[in-house]
Image 1 (cartoon, rainbow, N blue to C red):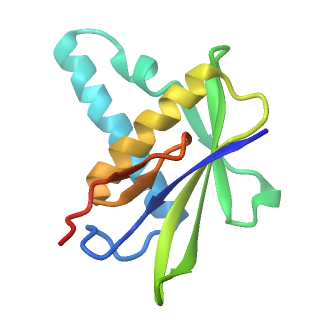
Image 2: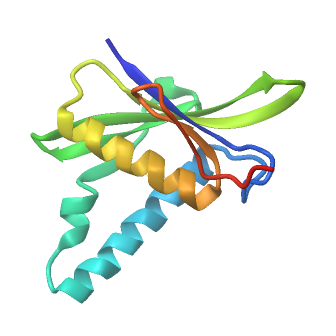
Length: 139
């Protein structure tokens, strides 16, 4: 059975809306950061920290894309975006899905990416285990 995590942009988040291109930009920024870390360490950390390629399929209709693993330990993670009504407000979100056949490595990397994106966007992150992390400033 597939599992989902949600990164919701709340009041106080750094962005008020996000689309698939915005999610891809976040992932490219993550890749760039781990590449710089690798240069400082003197090894190809980027391939170890982000062992995926970003791919789209024609049937996705610009609603989702997936990360395809380049290693048997990492297979795939699916990303999509949407909006939902919550307490009278429209809340944009990023949905991260671990489809059937995902590995423990995929789940660990998806958790890491959710936390990283959530912290960067100051968003609310509902993890795969149902726990919620608030990175957004709340009053």
